[in-house]
Image 1 (cartoon, rainbow, N blue to C red):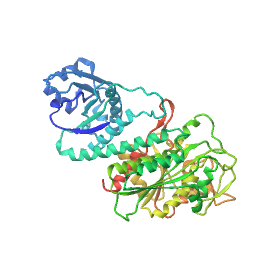
Image 2 (tube, rainbow, N blue to C red):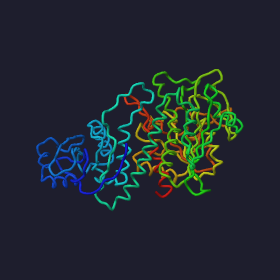
Image 3 (cartoon, rainbow, N blue to C red):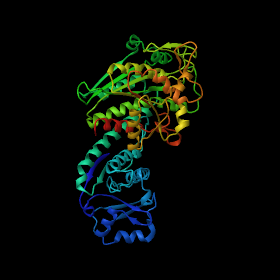
Image 4 (cartoon, helix red, strand yellow):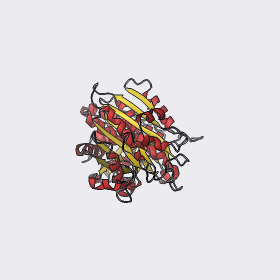
Length: 497
């Protein structure tokens, strides 16, 4: 969908539909009050009849109001003004965008961006509007033979800005939001593809496609022979059970000063995870195609950086593999040697994400990074601890952790920090290797991060466990696109934007 800005006298805006807010107890928003004056109180009289009380979720479509150029006025209930916050705003955008998409208007002007509250600035409102609108209209149809098309769907949404002094700021926010929405959509599309289509080789091809005709993006793909030469025995041990060869995907975005230290994003790219010899239960195993959401988020963040022409150097590293049972697959009790030279006793082959990430983290040392952030659907324990609301965050640097927490708060794509104390490290002790790949029943999310921390001694590092936030199960199952919003905001803050 196309997005633009509109300003001027709201009564003279020519549009198929103008969206206006009403707070509870029939309290007109500032824009509604302005329109009411232009139509000589007609809006207030309609509201007083009782069809629109302003309660959250209400909608009332009006036609041909006198003195108003807009063909339709869509009144939207916002609830109590003092309780109108980011969450309420996002719900409003989602519901109204779906309605607009069905009412054949094709174009509309959104008049709610300037209803600011304590936790929603104009820039944040613009971002929430565009990202939430795109999310509400998103449908994955790539693998369907027939797609029912909506007649005259919504194609253009203009955001009304009353104060022209804010236009420059609003235009920048709009451009950034559109780029982020594009990155989120790419992340969803990759994560929603089935494992027989989205293989490690397919992901590698998508990286090449992303870098095509982009002078700022250099893409390299390492095959298994090249990884073996580098000593990536941990990563390659996971792919032994699959007929699909593993790939290490490297995407280098050069938007900053030449020689400036890059931010490295390492995304887990398990395109399907059956658990290996430690086979998962069959129920909901189809959803294990989403085990590459960390890698997909790296793709989406790189795409957003390209679309924004972001002035920062970012490197995306995606170790891609499948984890399947086979005669040559990892067995419980096997010992493998990682690229760092550290040995790992595999006590559970379903704890494979850390096995591919640890070699990718060691590989990242060569970039002399400013910071490294890994993103992974790593542990079911994180879902138990934090549900679907927040990603788990652990780090070896408190300042980096705060940057990520703040970026999450800014965007509503929140994370929650868990401890990474040395006390947990002993749970990874092994009688036969330098470490075990699991730490027992307790603190599963933390011990997984403790495992990864052993490969991050040479740089500042943070780990995002997105097992609960990257995917939605149930009737509306599918990828959410998180944490692209958090990561792009982190990068924007890093480069002063």
